[in-house]
Image 1 (cartoon, helix red, strand yellow):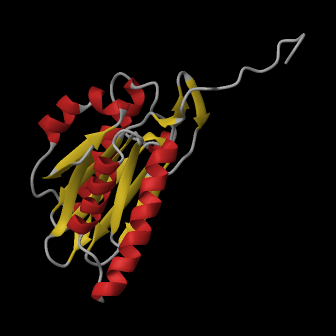
Image 2: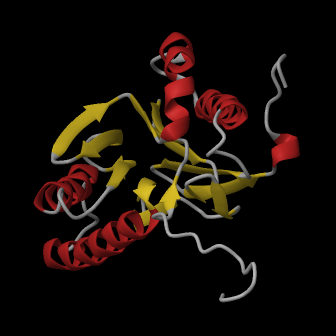
Length: 216
């Protein structure tokens, strides 16, 4: 604005400066994320759901450029719908992760996004896959986003193989709460998706209901 102090435009790329996590438990998976979206030092959206459905029992957690990550999720969602019609049954989690990996690799110079893919299928049960620039790795748990740097030690120390559904949900909430406390780009509410053979359950946890630790 000429001749006056107008509002400054945010010219930086809008990113999901974030904390995302997906964990296998005995019978399924739990995905979690915070809700804050940032551009540089500015918070441009306080409540964005970064857990995007790819199919009925397959979800992905988004980080990186918000536009890039959402576009990838929408493309894979469409491709999986077509794939499931062709094969006449629900797609495998590995198929969804492979589609994400292929897009990540093909457009690694144009897109800046990291998706964690997790879900349940009839073949291998609950599964978590990390996909980054063409990498495809199955892991018992995966974390990503700017907040992950603050909680790697906690996750490595506290993760236990064969956790129950409730134990896994609490583990994810504890991780998100710690990351949201330390990382200025993570915050807001916590989103939780729990997937098993029988259902896909979505939850929103308000900040006042998140676990509290001694330094909070």
